[in-house]
Amino acid sequence: MSTIKKEKKREDTSSSLDSILKKEIKLFGNSFNSKKKEQFYTELSVLLTSGIRLKDAIYLIAESQKKKEDARLFQEIGDRIIAGDDFSKVLQENKNFTVYEEHSIRIGEQSGALEKVCNSLADFYTRKNQQRRNVISALTYPIIVLSTATLAVIFMLQFVVPMFKDIFKQNNVELPAITQGVISTSEWLGDYGWILLFVLSIFVISQKHLIKQAWYRSKRDALLLKIPIIGSFIKTSNIARFTQAVSLLVSTKVSIVQSIHLAKEMIEFVPLESALEQVEKDILRGKSLSESLKEHSFFDAKMIALVRVAEETNQTEFVFSRLNEQYNEEVLRKSKSFSTILEPIIILIVGIIVGVILISMYLPMFELGNVLK
Image (cartoon, rainbow, N blue to C red; front, side, top):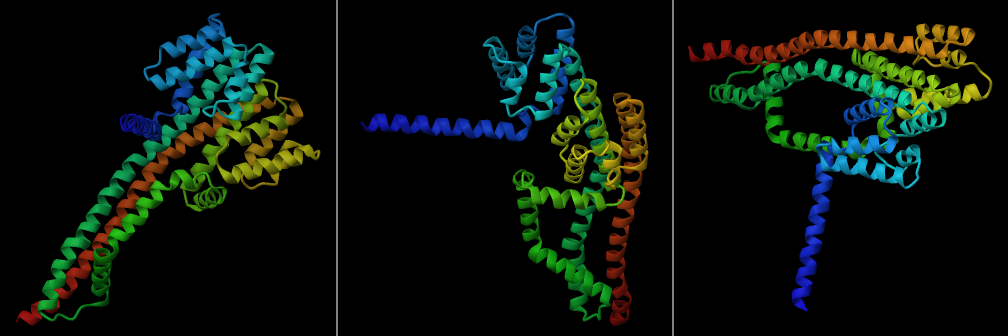
């Protein structure tokens, strides 16, 4: 009896460990992210255009996957389609896919243009990933410079300043206010630095939970918009994503109200989400899209003017497509200038901090020279 209990306990432990490992794997980036979606929709579009049936295309994609988790996902989708479920229904019930994707695929199924919709979704994720790469490229070097400089400042405060402090104390040197301030900062960092590090670690770890809280996202996004240069860049990148989503949906004959609603589901930036929610309500009350957009400062005059032209000429798809191209070019331009501007600013700030530390340590040296004489 005890042997059976031990075996059962061992199985439970093994099962728990397996569950934890799966969670950890997912945590470190094995989820079905935007990069994988870009590849998936690109391959699916090519296969469908080649005349291959949907279920066969899904199975072919499943066979080409390197990771078992991804292969299992596509295998399950293929099995559901063979069982008689619509592709859009399968996506709706799978948490890896968004409402935007599910609705777009449903339109493709109903209109018989599934390959076109898949190609549009592939283009959407291609541009989304390109924006992300631009941001990473723009931030990588400044972050390296900032990290190195921060470590240098911490080293000076933790090791260099205390050495000078001991020398000044032994010789009873009267310290200027600036030197006293730097020494106080050094002492505070030595006493409470680990608490600061602990708080920062907790904050970083808790991001996964906080990001799901509406109040946190609202305050974070509002703060980001107020930061010079960064706020403008984030705003432009989100408008680019919005115009691309509307362009895709309008091209598949979705009404403008429904397009706004679905685009809102796709956007993960609270100020834009709130603005689109109000725009949707205004359109339902009888206002035109350009009039609704005009009431929100998030949208610039250029966009509002072109949307008005689109309404008058019935060229909504064309105008939003051109707007998307313009905003994408602006995002690319800003990402390049962002890195160019940020780097010297960081170097200047760090140079001032290091300069203040050095000056504060050398000023008492003159008094020390008089004491030694």
